[in-house]
Image (cartoon, rainbow, N blue to C red; front, side, top):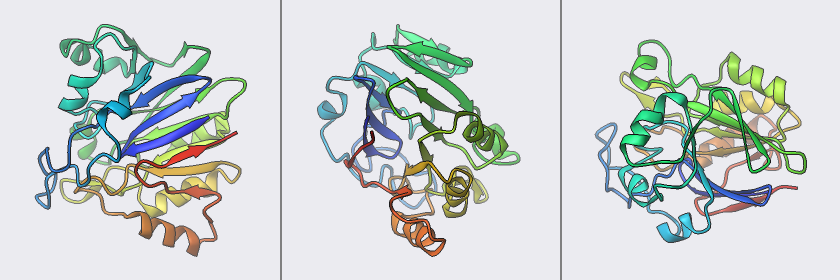
Length: 250
């Protein structure tokens, strides 16, 4: 298995000899509005061309339709006939954008010998949950590859803990920028919650992504690394890749 972090939650996977993409957020630096008034988004350019991001992709997974996970350029450039795995509630909006090969994942679904299981996220707390709407994470499983749990846009909560216990994933991918919404309500994991994942899954490798690309993020890669080192969680257990970096797992 190989994972390449493109930027934010956009990743390329080579898994079971299949190539797929997550959450295509492809706009150039500063092409989209700010979330906080600090800066237009995204904060950084893609590390490679959009052609390189999409080259050879056989399927896409879209965790939810927030603009930092599926932006207008992603909707324009993604082939309309490409198979797309998504939340059931997003099918109508994706079809309205012209996509014709949609596969909603209610519970689990098999594609090219891979079983994808959807895990609901808790994308915030209190009244902000209604503003955020539904978001999903996914577990990938196949006999000859590591089991991967892409947590998605979620805080640490009981359903995430239950998924870790149920699937015993080899690799857990967290969204760890500590993003906030409204009156500074946390809507994804920060340092403390990412480290809680590491401690709940001591035999898993945790990969922290969705960092340093959006103006509502509050946690940098350096801050997360410092917090992990202080807790004795080294880089062999918590990986914090740079944009464009490739990671290989056996």
